[in-house]
Structures are given as C-alpha cells and as structure tokens.
Image (cartoon, rainbow, N blue to C red; front, side, top):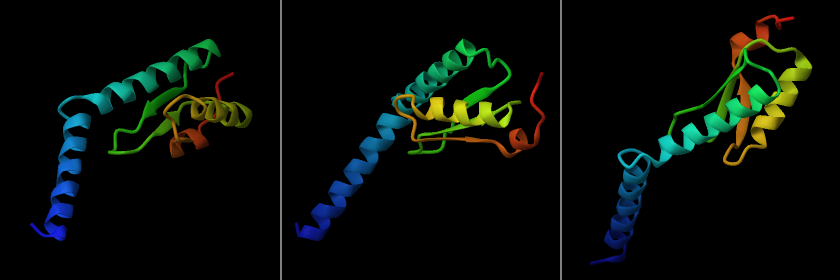
Length: 104
C-alpha cells in the first residue's frame, strides 16, 4: 500500500469512528442534553423561567441558542453565565428575542 492509500484509510476510519460515537452511540445527544440541563438549572436558580437555552444540534458545534424576554443587562449576564458552562463555546440570542420586550 502506498502512503496516500494509508492516509485516506486513516481519515476514513476516523470519520466512521466519529460518526458512530456521536450518532448511533448517542454521545453527542447525551452531551447536548447535559448542557441543556445545566443551563436550565442555572436559569431556574436566577428565576429566569421565561428564558430558554438549547444546545444547537448541528454536528461539531458547542453553541447554545438563547430565547425569551430579557432586558439588555439580563441578556449579557445570561449569555456570560451560559458560556461559562463546561462544554459551551458560544451562546447567542435568537433574533426574535432581541426584538421582544422583557417581562415586568
């Protein structure tokens, strides 16, 4: 076997192993569910019951989408606290949430 064939076989094996781990074996879903649970617990602790945090389910992303009514200060602090959660790379607000009025 030449070097190119070995390299392609290795790349293919890594791709298949990654797909197996994240999709049929469910590690990606377990990870996203754990992040969603930690974010929900944090939001409940700060009594932000109308705000939702969901891990994006796109492959190989660690982004959380936030939605719900909040003022500018709450948005920045919630975003900061969610980004501090283990496994989260980025948190951002949905476009609809940015135009919504916060609840009193």
